[in-house]
Length: 522
Image (cartoon, rainbow, N blue to C red; front, side, top):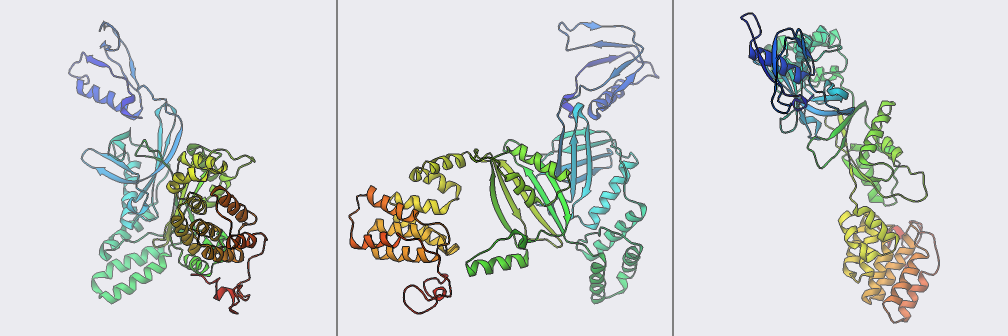
């Protein structure tokens, strides 16, 4: 419970030598207010209540008084954070410093908080997969002290080190065994000798403990080559499994500390399971390299059914039901069971980081979608492409549409430049048609014919009859004089055709294969 939730009294006491001192009495009260616990006093007490109008003194003999904090009405809330642990041995306090840093390797511990009604707070502390042996050993030591009630107070500190929660020393359901604690202690000693962090294993055996003890004992008596050999063998014996670490953050611009959900599971998510296919050879080659190296990738999707908080809560429910593949969980929530698309409510960004050691981290950010998405969609639905240009430029999506908007807005060079960039990324794009339209606008009909001709032979997306309709509409709205060259272009687009097989002879008559001629990736 927060200190600010307690009710304030001015208290005076009549004491004898054997009674509580005033300062001790206040300490008891403050302890009650901060820990959420009540206490009772059996004394004669005078009370002056500042909350009563007129500052009237209430006197009387009381056998017993009970003091308890005014509990807050916080709704149930469950969240998780990266954190660090700070001890103050002099004052016998433990501070849990919460971090909003999305990089898990910068914070060695995970804290799971549950805020319940009446100000009750439960929390659990676990080392992160990046925690070293020393950090694990520190965690074990702190758990042991908590179990022994060695801390008078436990503080949970926000990003600015302000106290979010003040609690008495919490109870523990369980802690590590003495055997596990001994292993962590010996491993942390070895870590100091090596000078590099060691990640403890998930399973500890007597053989592993004996091995670590043996290396520690002979460390000073062996040379560097032998030390390196011993460490390499130990790393094999530790057998740290590949792990995926997922952090889902509900981002709120109004606060520094945002709700998080942390999921861990064995193994990495296989990129090959995405089912992505590329016609472009270079793109396919690049994707195969990404799969092989498990390289960093990211993507953004928008949700229409749920608000950010609802989306986060739905993911939390799926996790409680036993699901852990975050990509499948997100896709499940994106499905819409209506023909008419509702407005976009939520923006979801997924970043798959390059693995560090045996751990691959996936960061998911859930936040309020920019309403410009919906403004853009409305304009595009109404086919007001020119008015949509500022939104298309800002959001960076629908580049093919932006190139088309440039063309009909007489920004021909911008349209051609963007179309070329799109074609470089996807040679089978409809941007060939937009490029042809822009050249028509410039009056360069030969270049326009070439662009359209390549488009109808290589484009794997639906272009017929849209390309012809767009061209005819453009000619009409701009009062473009019909010439034989322009008529040839319209006739070129008058018939639907399948994309050319890359192994076929090129349409230009060069007798070379299409993929080696006009269909060559540039």
